[in-house]
Length: 343
Image (tube, rainbow, N blue to C red; front, side):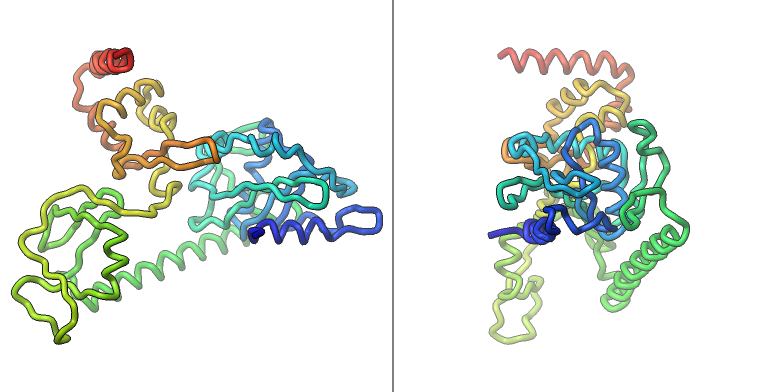
């Protein structure tokens, strides 16, 4: 079954004139490129950021410009693009992160590649540092206009900021309405990554939350405290007995880009260390596999990437602050790491 992306792109590719040239022009949602080359990443990223700051869109590879001739791409070469390199470049140069997909579509006897960029939920996406021949510049917000990606104009910038403020206002009002209805003393704030709960009744407590169990019980069970009764006679209930014990939190389906923004090299940059030193610290303190600090994501069929949360950065920063001579400390655990690998 074709994906929505494939269906949309095939519709564009099949809209040709009698000479075989593409009728569809570049617009606020699509840009054409003849081929993909990683050296062109600064220009691609400018377009990706511009799409993210508007309504999203496609970069379609395999279309030659002037005239728009369908030349196609080398399928194997495009399929072997190292997606983690694209992700790393985007994270290094833009914030907040740009969400995107990549794929290949076959049209008649040719293949065409695409990168789809999602509209950002946290606008504006801003360039963090220069790249290319001033293709992207630090501090600049790019926006997609009809057929071109360029610095945002004042009317679009003002609208973007107003939309962000309005969204934040609606979220706050929703929270305040719920707090007013339930009562401030009955509210607990749960940090979805660390598991920390802020509440007047269970200060410092943590919970284990299993998604499968909650999904199964949500519509079947009412939770009551020990010694209290169920208002609906005969309704199935789950009794909470004793005190809630401290435990690590298990929260599924977090956002890999928003909640785990750092690759290992980014942690090294933030801490002023070599990537190898960070690798050793991660091993020493068993950060991998601890969902509070780390997740593993599949970037392609054969490649995985390790991403780390802000708690991982704070944890490592605190570890280093406690060391009077952190260079000796790093050297010591580096030797432990090497002995472990040789064993």
